[in-house]
Length: 368
Ligand code: UD1
Image (tube, rainbow, N blue to C red; front, side, top):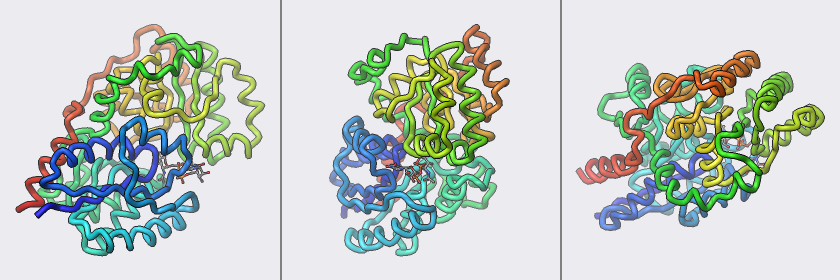
């Protein structure tokens, strides 16, 4: 008998992780009956709809309409709306990805109704429990039956937390599957031409983490550092809605005007974001996905955070954790520009075939 698999997407960085898994499952209709659920945590067209187009994701079968709110409200709304979907669909497995609120809420909802859970991108730890994502990771991993990890540090973290070995499966990084597929379509993006940029002639900046943008001092510090970088080369900055809101409420628009080569844009779609990264001289970001994608492209990444749950991007890849230390950011930028910055490599099994490994394993284990 076929197995019903319910896959959950919630926010922007989830779409590129679920797309390849769903595609591999749909290639095996004799084994899997798939159902896509969108929690609605991200609802803006620029944070959600464009990714469905860029990634050829089918329209969700269920939309939970969660929207924004405090962590408690968002978690509660998603769980309340997910229960009836679980009861109606009766899945054999729920697949959740990443570390956002919807990931944790749906994993909890499933396990409480005795539905097994697979967590893709399991085991990552920043060891900073003040990050909401760290709590989401710990809780999701604790209740999941299949833990698919992107790197061996994640395996070690899970073992140290007492997760039984048979639940841990090192499969590589599923986001790289989407990246490889998108490479064929990158010439459809006109992002560089539209912004008047030259390949290797600009820095690509994103900033949206609560600890960077919700605290006025931190946001000012970040803008000070960026102001110094843009004296050396233009900085392109697609602004997340959360960040735009904080810039306005802290009255920092004037601060931005003092940085003439800092170019603000609306959030960009998947293909535009990949092209902007691939052709950049450097990436400055607090995003998890950009740390990983820049490592795959071999483009230097200055990680604007005090810690990372993705040490492999630093130890193997092109990233350096710089937090918001303007002097360090300036020094590293100079190294990148004069060619003395480290050269990275692509981590093990970040090869574009991770989703195939996940689906092969599930095809075996769900039919025992
Ligand atoms: C969430 C994730 C974060 C991820 C990021 C990717 C959590 C705890 N955080 O952060 O890990 O890196 O997504 O973008 O799950 N907003 C809109 N439109 C939307 C969604 C949000 O305007 O479609 C604004 C609202 O003002 C909202 C704020 O962004 O209050 C924060 O949204 P939220 O979903 O809570 O977290 P993100 O900052 O997007």
